[in-house]
Image (cartoon, rainbow, N blue to C red):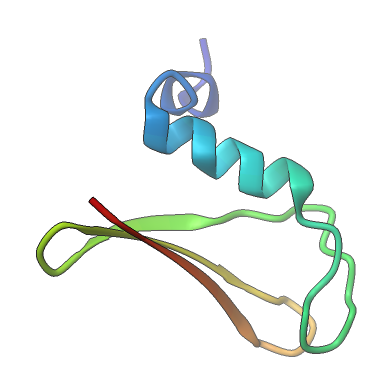
Length: 67
């Protein structure tokens, strides 16, 4: 089992996998990133933040969840 497979076994990992599978184009420049990777961090307090940086224009797409 790969690291990516293991991370998809948690609710946060499954949401990350969903973002990676459904993201089609950068909202800023329209670039289609085929190697899309969302980074997940625990933000201050009871929040989880998912971030993706466009390899073409460096725009950052952020999704934040409050727990």
